[in-house]
Image (cartoon, rainbow, N blue to C red; front, side, top):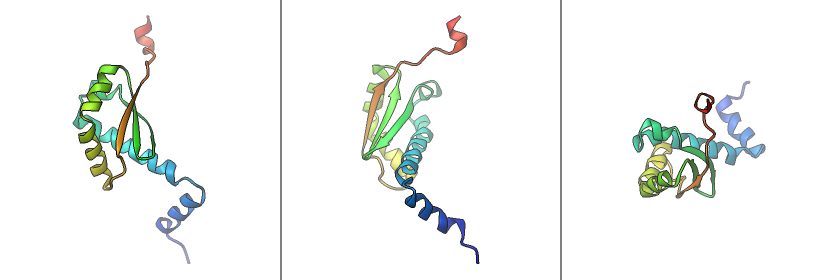
Length: 108
């Protein structure tokens, strides 16, 4: 008899300690999907979910002005991500400012 994959996959994930990694990736992807509801496409291009630990989602941004914008819409963004996930996974959003390298066509 065959064991359905949907029964086998959770056991394998838990036995290899991948549960937290998969949860973090799921939260980051949910954030990517809800960001366009709050910011236009240009701004979403410079916001990057970095990591998710201890119910805190950390976003990488290009400058302090954008970090302030995220701070102001933080509660709404948290509600949107949690709603997208269907569970209260995110409790806090933090930002880190990282300079981005210019694209190769901008250097010349």
